[in-house]
Image 1 (cartoon, rainbow, N blue to C red):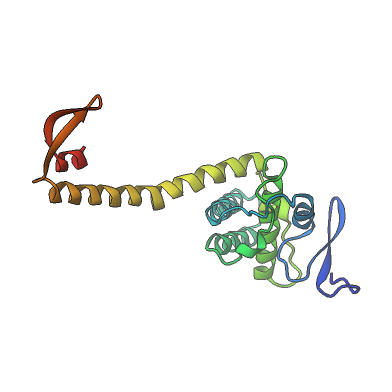
Image 2: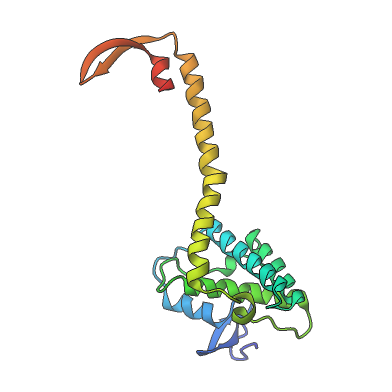
Length: 204
C-alpha cells in the first residue's frame, strides 16, 4: 500500500507491525527493519552468496512442489523467481549489511521477501505468495545460510580457484622450459651448493 504522506515509500506489514519501505522495493518490512537496525559497514553480501542462496530457494521450491507441500503453480513461480535472482537480475534488492546479528536471519528473510514478490507477479491476479509459509517452507536460517556459504565456496573453487591454479601451472611450465638452459648456483642453509638449472627450480 502506497504511503500517501510520502509517495517514495509504501507501507508493508509483518508480524512485528508496519514499516515504510521504498515504493519500488521488491522486499518488505523485515528487510527494511534490518537495514535500519544494522547500519554497520556499508558492505553487502557478495554476488556469489546471493546466487547460492537463491539457488537453494529454487531447489527447495521444486522439492516442496514435488512433495505437495506447496501448490505446484506457486512452487513453479517461486523456482522461476529464485532463478531470476540467482542470475543476477535483482542484486540491488539485497541492501542489508553483511555484519548483522543472529544466523543470517535478516538476509534469509530478505531473499524470501524478494522471491515471494517476484513469484506473485508471475502468478498475476490476487494470488499471494507468502515469504515464510511458501518460499521458506521447511527451511530455517540455520539451514540455508550455512548451506549457501558452502555452496558459494564450492562454486568459487570450481569457477575461480581451479582455473587460476591451472593458469599458474601453465605459466610455471613455460618458465621451466624457457629457463632450462640456465645453470645457477644452488643454495642450502644460506650457503652455495650444487649447481642447479633455473628451469628445475620452476619445475619444483
